[in-house]
Length: 431
Image (cartoon, rainbow, N blue to C red):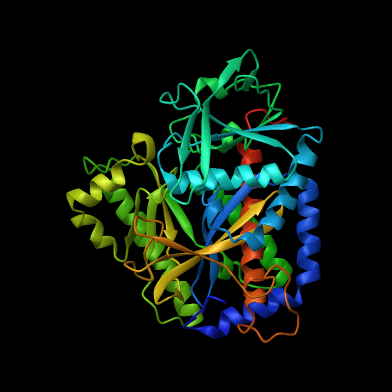
């Protein structure tokens, strides 16, 4: 069953789809050459919005949860990609340790950990889950409502290595985004592979830096295809020194929002788009959909109520927000079961392995869908969606639509690899 895609303005997106399909050999070669120069993040998920007149990534996650939302048909692809990734990093690997988030009682999250364990187990590794949570003092088995269970064990640090009692891994897979900064127990692990590296965590990463890299990638890709990069890139700027709780810095934010809305308005006029522009203001190092608001008019910022200010002031792990990214809002014209939806594409190494729709019945087309009340529908197509169907009419073929999503997601993943190179504390500097 193909999720029904309702796209209001079908013209331009179909034209973009056609451009991408026609250029497929050139695109795949372009990616191949990029991956010869750059290392892809170990695994990535990208939230994409399809406005009908443009298709763009709005968020890139380097510690993706939600692997349990992929269909079983997608598992072989994930296992193959996991094999390729491990072979490249540590071909003799035998043991893999997954270090999850500390919220050890969230069963939806733990279903994702079990799925990762399954994928790497099928890729030929002994996989165990080692918690860095102070609450886990002894092996603790949690049984999920569906009958699956996962055992969380306390990690043990010995000199330059991290492991469990009687379990010494070659590779450590972080599924913890380190919002509060890397704990000492994960630092100076020079004898093991830590994936992704510590500087991929939100204590170092900034969305504004990521989208700066993405802008660079989209310009080069736009040149390859002969298209305006704006069709695949959300405009953005950023504002610093904010204190939402006290209301400080809001004036500067207001003028930045105003400038951003004016830029989007100009683009809409250029393309004859009859929609009201909006921006999304979000914490520059935010995660889990926290610290996000939609602004349709800069004047709205003058009247922020206490609830909104509090929501914007603090994000995951109690981190206060002082810097925000002001991102062009991309409408979503997709619906699944009448609810507003956005595709989320999952990748491992440089391969697209699957995806799902995030949908939210109570949110509008211009709002953040990564919020309590969201649900997930797997991209469960009747046929394999990973190979495009040349010759199919644009907009009519689910595989072609998904191929297009995969191209945009890989551009965001490439931007993440640029970003990680730029923030790598151990990068070699050449004069």
